[in-house]
Amino acid sequence: MEQLRILIVDDESGMRAAVTRALDGFAFTIPELEADVTFTVEQAGSGEEALAMIAASAPDLLLLDHKLPGISGLEVLAALAEAPADKPLDLLTVMITAYASLETAVVATKRGAYDFLAKPFTPEELRTTVRKTTKHLLLQRQARRLAQEKRQIRFQFISVLVHELKAPLAAIEGYLNLMEDHALGDELAAYDGPVGRSKLRVEGMRKLIMDLLDLTRLESGQKQRDLTIVDVGVMARKAIETVAAEAAARAITIDLRAGGDVSMSADPGEIEIVLNNLVTNAVKYNRDGGSVTVTLAADDERVTITVADTGIGLAPEESARLFGEFVRIKNDKTRSILGSGLGLSIVKRLAQVYGGDVGLVSEPDVGTTFTVTLGRAGVAQEAAVLP
Image (cartoon, rainbow, N blue to C red; front, side, top):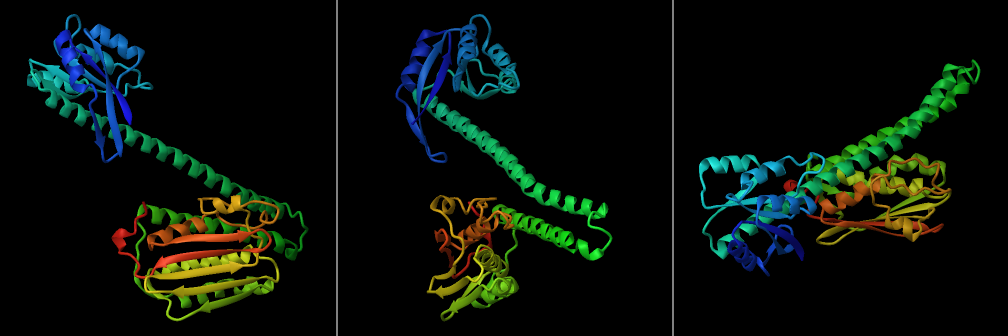
């Protein structure tokens, strides 16, 4: 239950008492926010008293009479509008007046009034106005919170991106300086190593950029999707072919087990992303002489992709955060392995697009098994925007 404060400003004590009675115990629900709201009511008999109370502790809603002894309601609004830009007042004002006119309404609106309530009014009219104003206030606050969260996420995203790009750029710059200074002598072959390592770093940055594009397109709903019938077995064989040379160089065997029809309605590029990430990781984080087993299965509703390796494995606390963005498990065993930290996050989002999910079972020094489920019927393009 969210309790808001209302300040009623009126020189008539009877009016203040009537408003307090009408709103005492008043509560309602805002379905859009899943919020229950109730109120406490405070009173002020003049504009000067109201300004002093607001300066001490601003209410959420201000019910402000136009005609007041001393400064008027419009002058109170003008004073509130002069609040410092870095400390704006987070309240909404409802003007109460028995002398409503177009000119008054225009001036009051320009000075920040949200709504008007003409005297005399019934308790139900008062509660209706308070309900409408409260809903607007809370939606406004939520929008500001979301905007602030968006700015913070963008800042964190850029900070992590800069961090991920600094290391490879520094390495490439170091290799270039080494070649520029002829530090390894005049034999061109001596520079094959630095050139190869530079190319590896460039490839890592390219992978990061492409993963970022995939991730942002998925989250924004801007990724164009071409749904067709896809044979997941064929896609799995292609994914295995892309890592075959690296696997052979490290004596890692890859076994594909596909039982029956594993076709589904899907975007071929999306299924390729899922399989490439899973199979590449299974080789990359494996031990020399290890094995990878890719198992495909399907029922009437789902296709299940299971990729098991005999690699370095993960501790439970590492597994729990593996699907976050830019998450790379860094320890003595993984320190030299390059990656963007986005691949599994993309896999999870794609699984969700298809009405499925991804999970893992892992044990340090034993291996890891990833299981991805995908809705076999695929999804309509308009339904592919992630929450």
